[in-house]
Length: 176
Image (tube, rainbow, N blue to C red):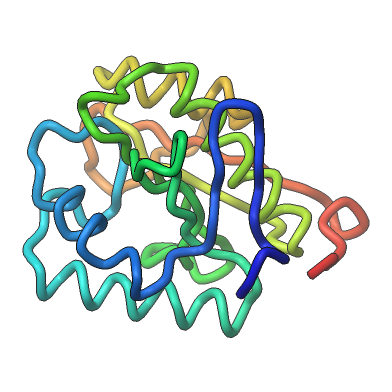
């Protein structure tokens, strides 16, 4: 991917995930103390490797995907989009930050950058499922520019909110 997909701000750097990030990603996904919304939740090494393969294939096929988040060259988390498992016409925004870097502003900034990148890359609709009681995730997704849908996201699903961000055809023209 190279630097073409790198996003740099004054507080962080986002790079597309790569095999070089595997050990950091495995540790992140194995930690129950991580804050954020990853579709797979806490997982083991095998599942993390499978997720990494999916992430790499998504980058190669679509030019969008999951980013590593680094602060002063130190890995602090993940943010980005993956094809939705529940809705084939969209992608799902996800993020996870290590406990020592837990700050709502960092998560919101990383999610906002990943959301904007995906829309600029041509993804028209991006969703996220959030428990109604998960105030931090709601603040992150709302602060990133997503809004709650009126539709019930999961048949019979209790206390789950569906956030979305939609760009019209001309707004989501592929730039990558």
